[in-house]
Amino acid sequence: MNTTSDSQLAGQVQRAVATHLEAHEAASAKELEGMLAACVDGYQPEAGRAALRQQLAKLADCGHVHRVTVGGQPRWKQGPGPLPARIAAARQVLRLDTSVYTPETTTVVRPGAMDFARIPSLLLGHRSGYWGTSR
Image 1 (tube, rainbow, N blue to C red):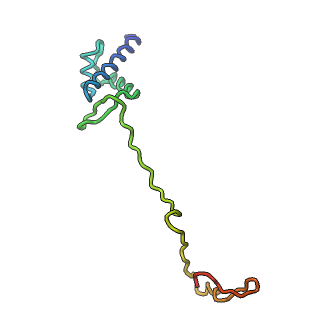
Image 2 (image 1 turned 120 degrees about the vertical axis):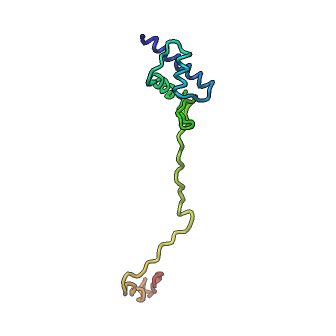
Image 3 (image 1 turned 30 degrees about the vertical axis):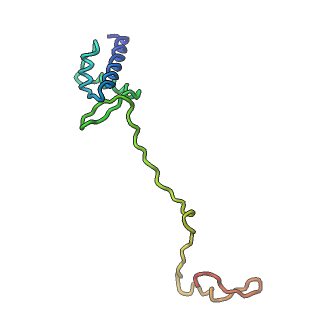
C-alpha cells in the first residue's frame, strides 16, 4: 500500500472508533478490533494489535478518547481523560496574628551569674536598681 491509502485507512479507522465509542459507552481493544474488521474496508486485524494501539494513542493525544479500567479490564471511552487530582497546599497560619510573642524566661546558668542585679547602678548621677525579670 502507498502512504495516501494508509493515511485514508487511518482516518477511516479513527472515525469508526470515535463513532463506535459515541454509540457505546466503552469498548475494549478486542471489541474495537472486531468492529473495525467488520466496518472498515481494507482493515486487517493484527496479532499484537499494534496498528490499533497506534491509532488509539493518536486519538488519546488529541483528547478524543481515554483509557479507563472497568471491572479490572482496560477499556476505551470517548472524550478527554479526567484531570489528575490536585493536592491542596498545607494550611499556613501566621503566628504573629494569633498570639502575642513572649520570649522564654532564661534560667541561671551558674551560681552567682545574677549577682549584678543586687548592686544598684548609677544612671545620670542617680542610683537605680535592676529592673529585669530574673531577680
